Image 1 (cartoon, one colour):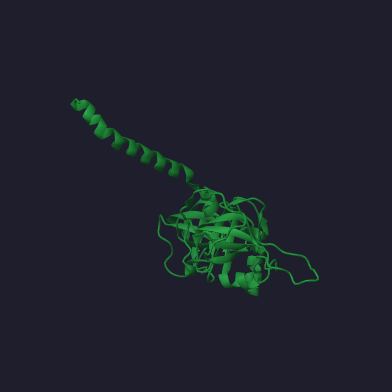
Image 2: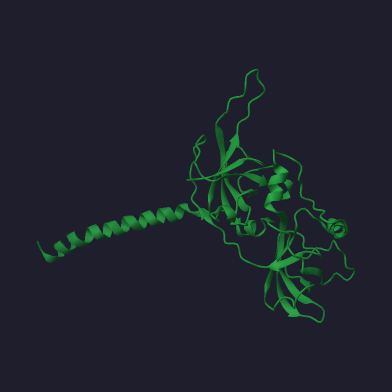
Length: 291
């Protein structure tokens, strides 16, 4: 046997293994996909375990000479921030604008005189809803993102970078922290399977929704205190109900109606996105961590 043939016999199996492994890794990588878009996670809203301090607020902006409280600022607009406490924001710093969820400008006026007037719907849709939402904290909407560009004579000038909707005077500014979008690998779920993972429920949905489909944002009552992390998978389960009968109602199987991936977490809650569902997800549905 010549040297060339011997070299091929030695090297070829090694190359074959490398190629198979590369193809396998490529297949795994191609299965992974973002759980949500950047705008989905940046505009998801959240539950804060405690009320957010409103020391830094958007008080007005350019082209609003009559101080119209319903004026809506858009990307590229110059807005004015006012620091009620401290020295104020640094030039070049970026800030996330938030407001209590469901609250509009008229409600904000009332809040200063009437206390906690929040527009988030606490109407009971499932047993224990009010207690669950209260335990998670205070709901907030993401409004937009601004960058401080100038220290003016009175306050600070910032430029609107992006919005999730209307930006209004009175919105609260908090330090901007990016929210990376986790990835996941789609997989078929056993419709009547279950796991022994951590169990909670879909305690609330943005905009007072009570049902959603694939791509919908949901707030679950599990968070950092339960070691929940971005990218965690949860099975969404529904307890099948049975009508009134003369006999005591038997306990029926839990049906898997979809899958949720955690986008980001807070102390007592997490923001998740429904990545698949075959019949819709309801407020109050059970979530169960996948093994």
